[in-house]
Amino acid sequence: AQSVTQLDSHVSVSEGTPVLLRCNYSSSYSPSLFWYVQHPNKGLQLLLKYTSAATLVKGINGFEAEFKKSETSFHLTKPSAHMSDAAEYFCVVSDHGRGSTLGRLYFGRGTQLTVWP
Amino acid sequence: KAGVTQTPRYLIKTRGQQVTLSCSPISGHRSVSWYQQTPGQGLQFLFEYFSETQRNKGNFPGRFSGRQFSNSRSEMNVSTLELGDSALYLCASSPAWGDNEQFFGPGTRLTVL
Image (tube, rainbow over all chains, first blue to last red; front, side):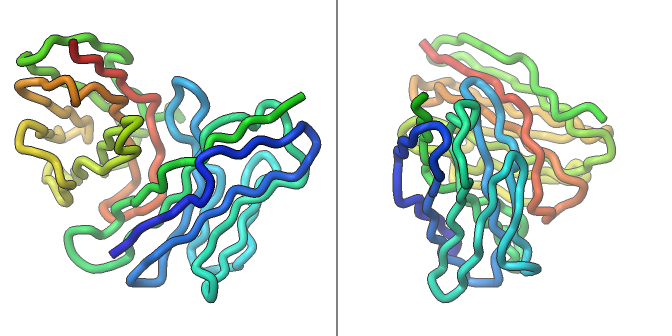
């Protein structure tokens, strides 16, 4: 079965400092992993995805994530936070298995990122 | 290319009523998935449609149903509304069934009074 654990429900950083949002996953198969961002009253926007190519994945807006199979982790980082990064971030694993759950997305509970000026 | 559109954006209903939400996928996308987002349960998968057939279903009661039309547009219906159905309902589209990169619409905010 697939599942995602986001280790922090809230993260606060000062503008210009690094961001680290932590995610651990569980998957029966070789997973696809994603990070999505949700700004208030908006839908979900894809930041980046891992699909078994390079383990360091670069996304939009300066974000990147590293897939570590031995640690079953897929942490999201950004070197320097901007006020516009304040939002909720979701780590997501997708099922590559067979049958009826193929392609289904499993979401973490989200991490609310606050950026202080 | 236009993104996923959902109508209406906001909806207020009372308990016991039914509601229909609409989703138009990105042009050329044939798979549509629906998700429910609540503060208590987070984001939960409802169902996925491809080629007018439900391919995948989450763990929701039968009051939640959906369909897909030949132009890939999809509707979801919730009958006999309960207070706990208040949520943001998100629709996502992808080119084909099993594509795990999904593109989300802005959602429909349903409030049940």
